[in-house]
Length: 380
Image (cartoon, rainbow, N blue to C red):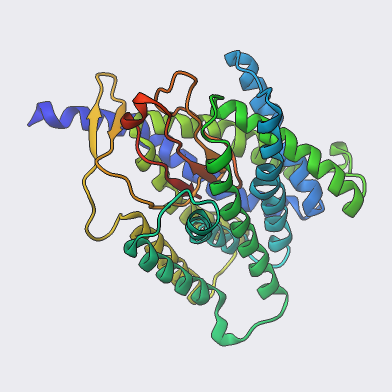
């Protein structure tokens, strides 16, 4: 018995600390947004955040001697993914948190899979709809109605703020299947695609921000908490978290790493309550639980599920061996990412940011494709 359990325990000790750290980092993103918008226009906050994240990943690119994509086709697709996966949703969360609690924004971020699967099935044709997924989607949207508290009526700044956060999640629902359809199959590393995506988003925000909100204030004129929040959102939430997420995928497997999305709303609520003293109405956490239940059903985490075989290497890393694929959709991590296969068609090792948190694991093409699980999205 010891011979069978020791590798599992060793593997757990290897990835669990990083798994919990990632949930805490992504869950705290909504707190940092709340602090940042106290002095910054939402567009300016997003610009500083994305520019900081881009700079962080460029440094990592240099250290790893990786390079940015050179194909015009990739950059053209990145314009769409950067807009719907970074610039628009990040800004909408900023606008939303001017009207709602940070913990509520964290709950709305968890609704991303409710948009990913329908769009992937109906628009991008990258997934197929199963009965289980349809039931999960139904439960998820019921949870959305509970979070909104529709029986109390609609209207008011608070309701508008919730719709803005809901719209941000909907943007991820466009970005994730789009990049899975047009970008994830490229030979570039996820790190390369992520850095390029953030560079494009920075350019978009610089232009739109100047037209809508004027010139951004100088960082020297901001308070230390706001500067710290920007650095945390960019360098920590996108840079360090990106590296941690890749490590979790390597050690625990893509499916296990994707379950971090279930902890992110919990951390967002705890941090909002403890640091900002925020409170939720009873129906908001209840609705969030119904949403997560729907996502779990759609992913096959509840109910009958085909077994997934795994092999544990000598170094404790876990390789997932698929039995059969389905169209399950999970919630994306808080830096929002798409895994891109290496040039040699090996296992996926990187992800591309989509938003406060989203990731899609891509299958490599060719003979080695059977060694990697089918694509699945994750949303933090």
